[in-house]
Image (cartoon, helix red, strand yellow):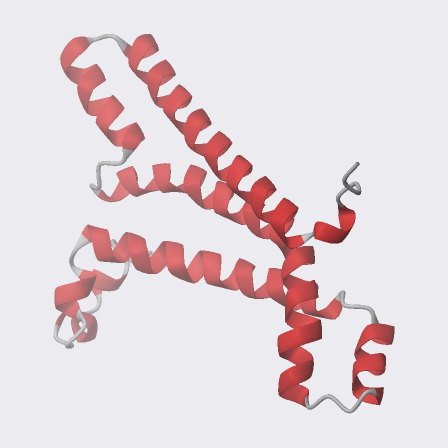
Length: 160
């Protein structure tokens, strides 16, 4: 819709946004950003709402200001709780990047498709692209797991 749809309106083609919207790269960035921003906002909202009311009440009883309450109590706890869901969102965006090849951008899948057209070896090339996606997903998963470990020292077993 961003790349093929907006260009059909004359008002868009005559606006100051047209130099950006006529490029496939920027349309893909805009579409992916809008999509992931909505999901990320919902993930963060869910994390903030999941902070136990007792903790917030105790912090208010201690006389914490609203800013200090968010900085020291709500946001650190919400980030720890939202991190697994956000990691899933990052992996979904990684997989969704293959959709960029539908608007003339060459991502990993698009490059594999071009090479298949030249070499007629679809199994090897698409298997290689799949393995590369698998390795990238594994790296993101490990990074999220490491961040969860670092953000939750109270869940680690005590040192011997």
